Amino acid sequence: MELRGKPTAAGRAKATRTTPPDPVLERPPIPRVRFLRRLSRTLLAALVTAAVVVPVSAAARPRIPAPAPAALAPPTRATLGEAYTANRANAAEASRMAAAHGDRTRAAADRAMAAPSRHFLTFDGRGQGLAVEVLGDLAHADRVAVLVPGSDTTLETYGRFRAGAAALQDRLNSLAHRRGTRGTRGTRGTRGTHGTRGTRGSTSRPHTAVIAWLGYETPGTVSTTVLTTGRAEDAAPPLKRFIRELRGVVGEKARVSLLCHSYGTVVCGRAARGLDVDDIALIGSPGTGADSVSALRTSARIWAARGADDWIVNVPHVHADLFGTTVGFGADPVSPAFGAHVFAAGTGGHSDYFKPGSVSLDNLARIVLGDTSEVSRA
Image 1 (spheres, rainbow, N blue to C red):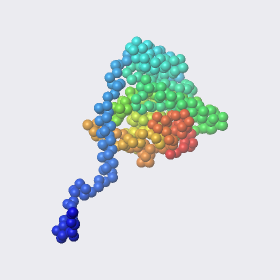
Image 2: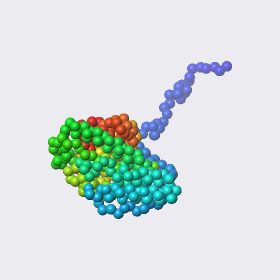
Image 3: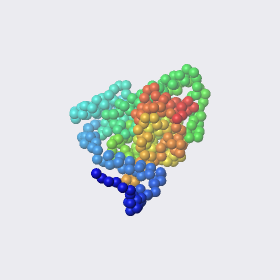
Image 4: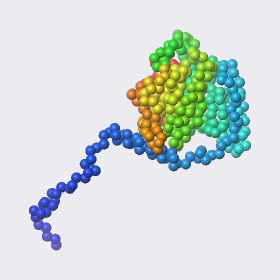
């Protein structure tokens, strides 16, 4: 049996002795701003590392043979038909070459683009592929939307991109028909603040067209290129050139809107300066590389939206130098500090902005039509 007695003075002193302070535990807390900056850079570093070490199957894919693009002069209203015919023929030849090469997926994609109902201003079946398709009657359009896609958009995945363009065209037709029956604003007048246009009273129905602009080599979602502005800087000059050529077709009185999704917003940010468009909408954006609307140096009205379930909200909006490369795209376009007109995008995710029946699609259509007072704000 163990006998217990009262503690001695020495025991009491031992029990009350304090532990030496731990220098780690006693360190002052890191300020919130510094903590967030470190966290953001850590996340970006993790993304870069993942992009480097995760294999991308497309990188090992052999190059698919395809003919050179049709040699065409910049289109005019009178030559649109010739451009459509030449590019359909090019797509048909690309399909035959891809089939002979044994690539059934690319052959099927090219063959679909060669259908008589398809209207391409540009088609290039080489590499990932480039395609600029018109939905609607461009020759008579006075409201034109140009869609700029994000990462992983190639000729093989083009169908998803086109589906969004088709949904927008359907919604534009519906709203334009409604406008035509009730009588409202007509074509654009003079440019106002941030690209707003005065309108003249008219009972005529607007004529709309949507252009799916896959005019650049998009980065892969799992790649280092998706974290930098390199592809966007390469894409900006052809986008600027295309808008100039588009003006040659539709004229200066037509209202032109640029709708940019995901990495496409980085492209539009690089191309924005001096671009002759009325509106630029940034949807699901990781940032544009600019810190504010004024830094874009454009007279266009800038819009921004993000769906409630869009994973892009988790992308850090910072610039950071990692491995000798600057990654990240800076300010969040839907933040008040950026200065865009933020509109409602509903509960959708990253790929739902052009989903039929969605809040975001309805608002995008109203932006294209110039019905800005009817756009619901976030």
